[in-house]
Image 1 (cartoon, rainbow, N blue to C red):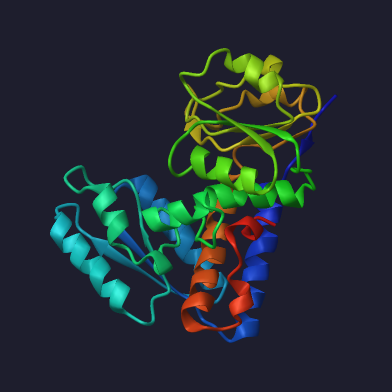
Image 2 (image 1 turned 90 degrees about the horizontal axis):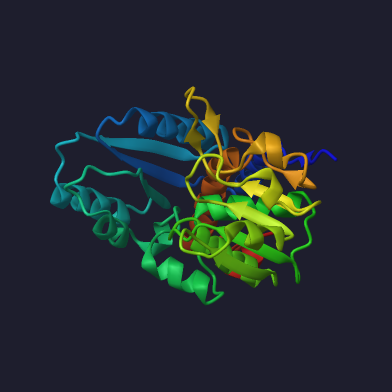
Length: 294
C-alpha cells in the first residue's frame, strides 16, 4: 500500500485565490503589517514570502524593519501605533525576537482584533471556549488540509503529538470542536508508538526530525506532518519518517509541500476575516471558531 499524498501547495493556492476573490467581492483591501526585528536570515525569508503572497492577493502590505538593538519599549511603541492606525487590519510580529525582548509582553500588546497570528491570550481563550476567534495559522491550515482531503473527523480517533501553545494545543481544540475524539500526547506520554497505532489521524508537531516511525502508523491512517527540520545533510524534513510512513498511511503530507504552504495562505485568510470584522463588511464572514475550520 502506498499513501495518497496530500498536496499542500495546491490547497494553499486555491485558498489564496479564494481569499483574493472574497476581498475583491467585498471591496475590502485588507491592511497587513509585518514587524521584523533584527536580521535573522530565516525570518527575512519568511517575511518576503508573506509580503509576496499578500500583494498577490491584493492586500495593502508593508514590513516595519527594526534593528536588532531595538528595545522592548520601542517595539511596544511601534505596536501601539499600529493598533491605533485604522488602515491596519492585521499585525504580525515575526518570531523569534531578540533575547532581551519578552515575547509574551509583545504578543499581549497587539490588539486582539488585529492579532492575525492568533497568539493573543484573548484569542487563545476564545478558541478554547469554542467562540469566534482568530485561529493560529498553522493549526488552521491543518484543518483546511483535512477538509480538502475529505477526512471525516466526527468521532475519529485523532492523536496530536506536541503540546505547544501555537501548535498542538490549538490543534487539539479545533479537532475537538470538529467532534473528533482527541488525544494530546507529548514527550512525557507513555508508549507513544502505541498511542499512534490507536489513532486514525496522526498530527505530528514535535519539532523532532523523523520521530514518528513507519511501524507507529496504523494501516490507512491519515498522517499530517507539521514539523520543519533539517536532516544530517541539511535537507528539509518533517517530524515523520516519511519514507517509512508512506507505506503504512492512507494519506500523508510531505515536507516540504504539505502544511508549510498553508500557513501563509491562512495568514491571508485571518487578515481578511479581521478586516471584515473591523470594518463591518458582510459580518457573516466572521464565523465562530468551530466553523472556521471548513
